[in-house]
Length: 534
Image (cartoon, rainbow, N blue to C red; front, side, top):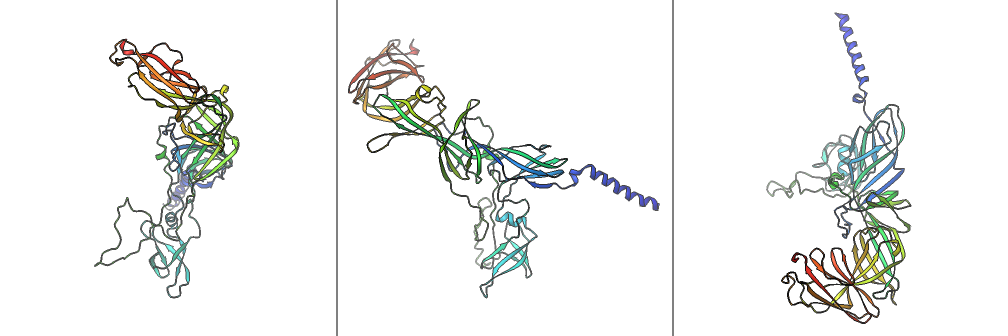
């Protein structure tokens, strides 16, 4: 019996050792390793998919996103380990993250929810020693001593000193805590971690790619007319900028910068998936306050409305104001990305935190363009007095007119030379224009060109049955040069129009084009009929 009793514990210990050897990942703690700072960066920015083509991006709340690719070096130990990627974008969509270059891939990935803050610093030091410095009420001199944090940061801060237990900041005199170190795993920058395993161990170059919320971009064009003669074709200089916005608190230095034009179909709620880790403030509460007779002077707040109190000497992370940077020596190049357009900046750029950057992507001299005056004259309209015609600056997006590149949506500002220098004559928002499309920029109303619309037939077109209705427009041009005039006469799906010179269907409308002589008047007559009357 004695021998058996001696042998059984040995057998048990041996079996336990074998079991531990068979399951090293379950017993051995994972070693935490930090990936290096990025050795290469690429930032591809997509416009807010819900913003209209003519809408402006919201600088205070951008709702576009970016695809960020970071190349880093990491040295793995043998066995299981956790890799920390410090400094990822706070708007990171963690579920989209992919890490390539590891020998055994990714076992698990996590987005750290806590960042360095007063509350996180206290919670991470719970039960450990800090230095508390207080003011001696007798002498007014500061004195320091060791203390142990005995409470969490969610209802007051209690420390233990040689005098006993006491609440911090309840003496009414200046007090501060000094921490010897930052708790392990706590960082002032957002952190993304993955678990992996390497049988041999070694140094690897890995790439972390992920989507991030809080970016946007748009184009803006500056057009300067050369020698304008009203109504005649001339030239203009066209310059365009890409304005890139990064609303994250992280900068991406020396990065390859790309932007994508066109509307991407996005079904995920990236804003919700990219909930950024938030630093928690420190609430310091002292008891007792008031008296049983007077009641507590503390106002009652609901849990939802209670906010952290900003205190002196607490750790505060400040966001820098949005900065703006303009570069005029680099031109972005256009590339094809499926049905979308990709603009690549040929030189590396720094996409600054909370910043705007402008990069030139188009510069054309001698773009052929001309002015077109416009008016409407519909059969159902009553006869009216002469009204001012609209003005369009018109060109075509092709090589023959000096363009021939995709033009992403954005604002356009138009200047005209004068004896006092270049003067502003118009500003509009443009939609996306593909190669081969007509580009029209509305400039407002003319004070030199007027048109008067009149129905010559007595009967209203709704009462005319299958009969034709005769219409007339009288156009006057007070300019010293002939002009091109464009008259819209009704929807093509609703009306037929009699044969007339200069007629075409444009954007679903019947349009009559005419040339009006300098200082002259021209009368245009045509016939229309409702299609449903046939």
